[in-house]
Image (cartoon, rainbow, N blue to C red):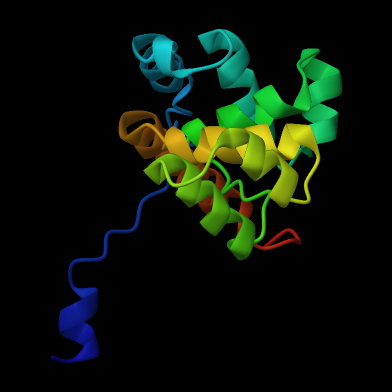
Length: 161
């Protein structure tokens, strides 16, 4: 195909075509609705969970979220775990093996608390995360939000053009 054939369909006008910015659904409604639908799976109310998830996706630390939401850190970490935002592993692999022994019924909880060298909060969080996996429906929405956030924030760091 020659250049003339390629250029034959090009039209020159004196007007510019209207341009606009594409609107992308940020998923706020979807996130809130899925959190409300699974409110029994959360340790806090769905609106607080939505704020926690959004803040974590935006890169805020657990400490910052705790300050802004007036929520204790263990609730924030458990919420992030149930929503599939972050993997929560407060214990070592060996300590998790001991915890699995408790789940199987091979060990008593009192024994686990003595054997595991972790603060009480971390031990309770580990027990919670092992017995309460992320909620698949919430995790799917959160994954979409994280993907959308990465798409929009991964562009050039300087103006183009």
